[in-house]
Image (tube, rainbow, N blue to C red; front, side, top):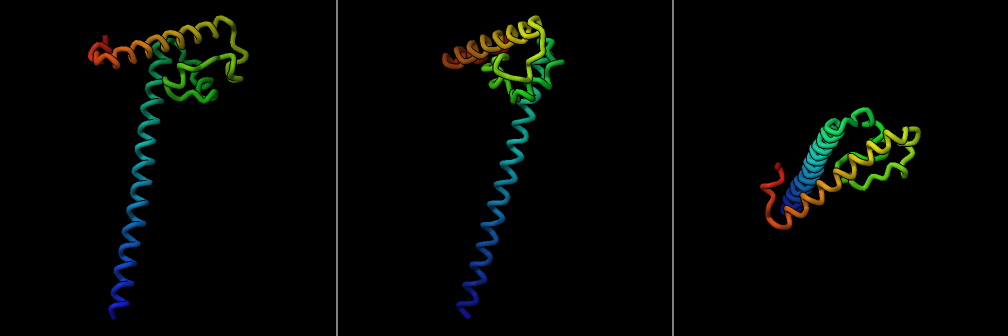
Length: 120
């Protein structure tokens, strides 16, 4: 009787553990998807702001899915940017250089506790 009770409790505990692990995995996946949507939205807005929306597919083909990844972009290193004119490449390089400067300013402000000036 005690052995049967132990087995029932063990099965219940095991079921709870499995449920908990599955719940954590699903929650983590949902959080990651939200994060990806945010980065996708952020990158899309940036591309639009700099009149680069026509190159969205090239950025995603190059594996650039966030602004942080965009900062380190070297268009010469990615096959997806081949075939663009030098004017188009310069336009992209200038926008990426400006983004890099903005990110450096953002980091500088954060280190000094001046994040309230980021929007300005």
